[in-house]
Length: 440
Image (cartoon, rainbow, N blue to C red; front, side, top):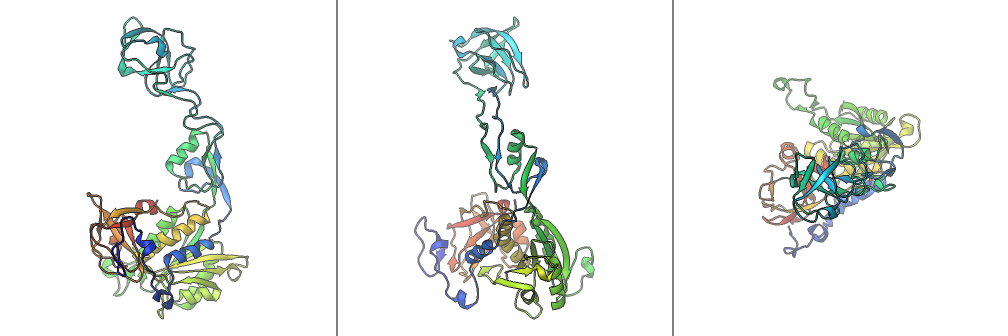
């Protein structure tokens, strides 16, 4: 990656840290993404409220208290496979034949192993006292007379899973602030946790602005009026919010009128932690969200130096003006173009909502993969390019990077975080953020 104002960075150089800032940003009234995120997260105090839910229903929820194991896992030494438990000293050479003294199935506890004998044992069954190895059945041959031939010389400890090797009794298996995954739920169940204390879901009111918007199903494609467009953001943002564990109140489409916008914001602030809108936060005559928020509370962030997504807004709406209660609802206004809305949600709303829930990991993993494309337009804004990984291990660029081209986000499997004033040449390692993680 090549900042335009200087030469190609040396190997290992981080263009994001070394590319010079554009002093014109402040003059243009723009704020950098890093500064915007820092300010946004400073306002995102954890909600604090918790609830206890079934472990079955806790996927993607944020754990509100450490989970400690009351047991060891596994609770007893057990067999890692089907075979024969024995004393390794009783098998001095391959071909040794031992009488089979017992059979131990999973869930059963056998008797102490008699010296000079073997126990038929199955995966997960406790290893009998006295045995110090398990030989897999493929290395044994059962005989018709009730004996077994051991065709290998086992070392002590072979194929035995020790008590507590997965989880020690009293160990913290999951930590407060962990966002729960299917494997975490399995781990919780393995230590007997059928219910988990998790953070309350953020309550989010969602609406779109724009007289041009119509809902799919309300007008057939053949009959859609000139100038009208289907409201894709309503579906996009609702799904994103639900994936982040939010309780969503969908308030539909608000007309492009100042009074209607003020009323919608006032009503939405009541009973919600966040009011999220798309559209109407630019500077046009029909963009009423910014002055409406300022009339009900305050706006502390507006317009960022990113592409797509410059018209982003953050503020608070005083609930005293909404329902007479104390405090304020957070307000975030996203751009109307669908890719701009998508990118700003992933970069800013996602970590904001995770912090509201007390999550400890907010930032996505950034990989560095080779660009298999050229990007010779050095922008004075940080740019997020939609890309897809290819079979050669590099990244291909979607041909049309416009903020209204939602197909780029469907075709791609991630974005390149390209610093301002930076071009990309084929082969350059570029910062890649995967949709698989961002949308998890």
